[in-house]
Image 1 (cartoon, one colour):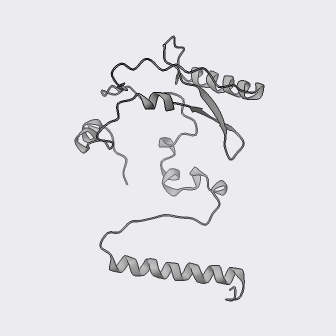
Image 2 (cartoon, one colour; image 1 turned 180 degrees about the vertical axis):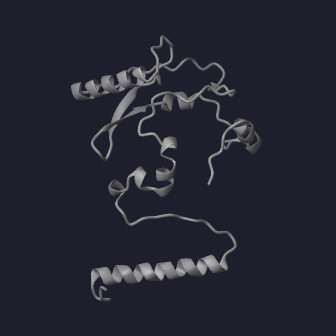
Image 3 (cartoon, one colour; image 1 turned 90 degrees about the horizontal axis):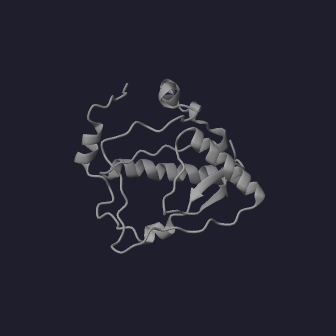
Length: 173
């Protein structure tokens, strides 16, 4: 056990004091929240290490091979009156980025997540490096967002959510 004078001892002491405050809060306040946290670094924790994922491996595939089935709800983006279709020129990319972009687009086409389009609308894309040094494809919709009519109700209504669940199969223990 680290002593109070070491860095580890100070950190442990602070952690125990904080834990004591949390326990006091749980018994005093009315509203409660459950928070799960881990001291394990993110890179060491894999989805298959989570017990509920292990139990239902068939529900958590390693790779998504197709789009979900079509739903009754049709999605649309309403534009402000008089707004023209947004079409922005592509951003400049290095040859390495272009090869990565081409590879990712071919993969998305192969899985039928995207399809060729002749739409007058277009948004530029950029690649952002992730922690594991792979590249994430990001679409810059900022110009489209400027001419989009914002929803008054940002959260879905509960009755709409319940309608969507009609006929669904619920997995529970």
